[in-house]
Image 1 (cartoon, helix red, strand yellow):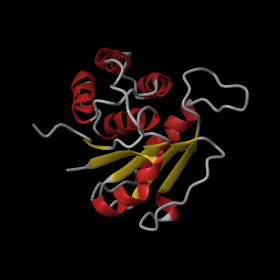
Image 2 (cartoon, helix red, strand yellow; image 1 turned 135 degrees about the horizontal axis):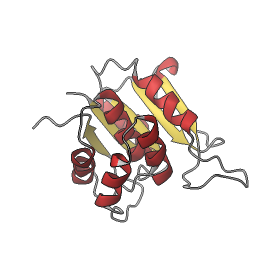
Image 3 (cartoon, rainbow, N blue to C red; image 1 turned 90 degrees about the horizontal axis):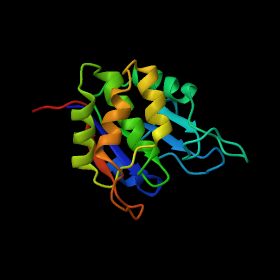
Image 4 (cartoon, rainbow, N blue to C red; image 1 turned 90 degrees about the vertical axis):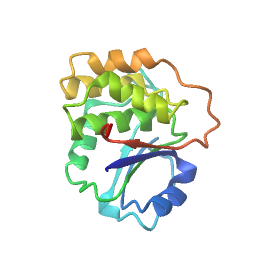
Length: 174
């Protein structure tokens, strides 16, 4: 079964090795410096430079955009799903959970948005997906507001300390 490992920046090396990941998506501020884990090939690492904001940007901040979501979806087309994919942001709470949900729906579009959001909440009580990414993902994937409504329905996640990570199956196996 295909799995997405969602984590904060500080856990990418440990979790990439532990789960045997070979591919990674980073949703991180443009000037945020970090080292890609050695188990992740440079050509299978997508860095999406953005800040964790829900508005249009300004003051040097880069808002999530449609181009970011389209790059994510294009990158996923080449994921063979034989090994987990790591998706991370600074704390693993907002941008990366949003990207994981968008990824799951882009790979398996027949999924019910509410069931996917409930699955996210079950494995990640702390997740509060970035609303701007969710809105853009909803539009790009043609979900007609259902993804936005599903994520809104699960509400804000529990407080997190930046060390929480989780594994999200890309589709329901039940």
